[in-house]
Length: 88
Image (cartoon, rainbow, N blue to C red; front, side, top):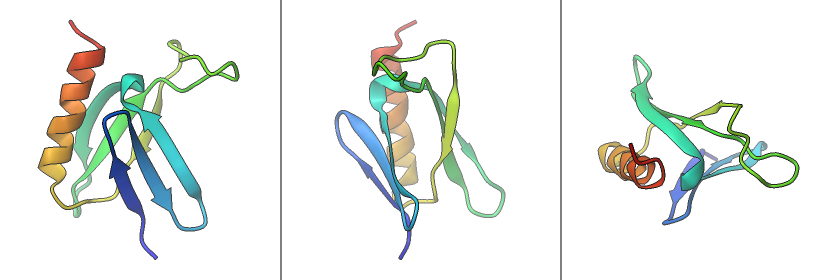
């Protein structure tokens, strides 16, 4: 079974076999960029949640997504979410 990336208007979820689900809400995103040499992928940088379910603005975590179909469209969607939630 392969990893799956799911996205909707609120969050992105990475489902990995035997590792469960990691979810990042779009409002948590700080940055996204492409990485990888052989297989290009996306790397997300985001603020994690605290035990009180608040965003920890002093901490940054990353999540590397596997290569997906329509990766350019996913990148554009995530960049638009960052602009929406973190206006300059």
